[in-house]
Structure formats: structure tokens, C-alpha cells
Amino acid sequence: MHTASCSSTTSTSGQGDRTSIATVHRDIIETHILSRLDGPTLASAACASPMLHILCTEEKLWKDMCTSTWSSINDPRVRHIISTFPESYRSFFSDSIPTTFNRSNTAAWRDHSRSLPTSELISAVDICYKNNFICSKVELTETVTNAFLAPPFRIELLGDKETVLVPIKFEADNDDSLKLLEESMSLSWIMIDPTRKRAANLSSVRPVSVRRHSTAEEVQLLYVSVLPGDSRVGSSDPVQCRIVVTCGREEGGEMHVREMNMQLQDMDGINLSGEDSLVILQEAMGCERRKVGMKGRERDDHLKMKTALSPYRRLMTSHGLVGFNYTRQY
Image (cartoon, rainbow, N blue to C red):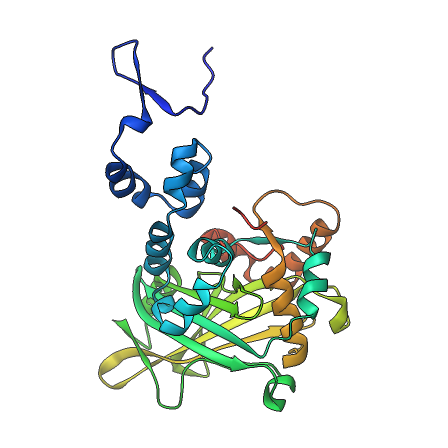
């Protein structure tokens, strides 16, 4: 039986001699190979050889990957903040891909973070319909105002009379439009802490529920993720991050996004204050991320999460969604 191994050489078809990957022109590797890889695969390729490590950590490669994934980060304010991250766009991508969280090994981060007061958070939000961007916005939220600190914590993304066109026709007596939204409308909500130079994607990417709201001509999409709790807010139980997108029918049958907001709730469905939400968000951005199995306390949190999201579990499973389970991946 032959075993596979990682090598910087490749066999020439039908011949016994071997050719080093170093003989392949750098431009060919960068343009025709590395540029087609996703983030995790690119990070793995960097471990294959010293040369690939150099090529796979090129700033432009990660910048192109980030800007093609999240259009909102083309905003000059966000570009500047990303440039201050430890490894610039590579660090930002590692923070911002939807993944899971692990509580372990975060004590040092918490001690460090408490000494760095955050005066503002930045939301970089993208909505896609059938993989095409229909809305990209950046919202700055000051965290030292009384309006923020008081309950309930809530970030509204769209201003008065501001709407976003969704390229489908709204039919009040037909559920086809609801199915299209469920299958085709994805959302990314990246929260960025400029002071700590960390970020986290707070969205489930796909909606966990789509339902008619208030009138027959409005539809609500719910995106849910689960963040690790913190004893400083009174409980270490996981917290739900709920993003609600409300769509409505406009003149001519066009569908528009009318509202988009984000709130944090405890396990009993009680909205958190801005002060407590800031603690939870900082914890989420500071936690390590991973996709492997859980044990101990992590398993307990996972069971609590499943209980809290039981009404949406079937939809989440059918979409292959991930929640927050608390390593930095690369």
C-alpha cells in the first residue's frame, strides 16, 4: 500500500524522474493556482514548502480574497483598520470567516483586553442574493454614550427611508418568494474592534428562519449565531446574536429590504444592554476559533445552544450553518 506524503516535488507522468515545484514559474503558481484557493486551503498550502509559505503569505493574495468575499471592507475606514492587524488581511480573514469558538486559552486575552478601553465598534455588513452583492454598508457605533450603554443594545443599519432592492418580485399570496429568500439571501455581519485589532463574523450566513411579518406584504429573515457568555454579565451561559432583516413589497411588486438590525439576547430571550453586549462581543472577538470536536465545558455550552435554538435547528442543519462554539485557524 502506498502512503501519501507532502513534498515539494511532483512526478513526471510516465517517467521515473521528478520535477521540483520550484521550477514552476512564480507567476504561474500565484496567478493560476494560489489565486483559486479558498482561505483554509491556502493556509494549508503554506505548510507544504518554504517557497509556498512565502507565496501563500503574500499580502495581495489575502487582500484580493478578502475584498472579493466582503465588498464592505473596500471602505477606506475599514481598509485602514485592517492594515493595523498583526498580519493585515490574513489576520482579518482568519477572524472573519464564519467558524466556531473555543473558550480555552483566553484568560491572557481577557486580562489584556480589559486594559484597552474600546470607544467604538465598526460593523462591516454585506447582503448577497444568489452570490451577488446587493448591499454593502459600514456602520460606526460609539460605545461610550449613554444611548449605547443603556438597554436594550441594538444596532440599526439602515437609515430612515433607506431601502435596498432585492431582485425578486414579491407575491403576497405565493410562498415562492419566501423559499427564494431562504435559499439565496446570505448575510455577513463582521464586527471590528479597532483598538484590539480583532474581528468576528456574527452572522449565520444563511437565514435560520423566513416568515411573514405583521402584514402579508412583509417578510422577516432571522440570522442567528451563538456567542460565549461571560460571568461579568451575570452568567456564563451562551448568548444569542440575532440579526433581523425585514423585507417589504414596494410599488410595482418590487421587494426591498426596509430594516436590518442586530441585538444580543440571553438564554431566556432577554435583550442585553449595550454595556453587557460590549463584554460579550469583546469575548467573541478575543476567543480562539476552531472546527474540531468539543469536550467538557464546551460540550455543555453546545447543549445549551441547541436548546436555545431548537425552533431553528432543522433549518440550520439543512443549510449546513455553523454557530459560534468559541482557534484562530491559521
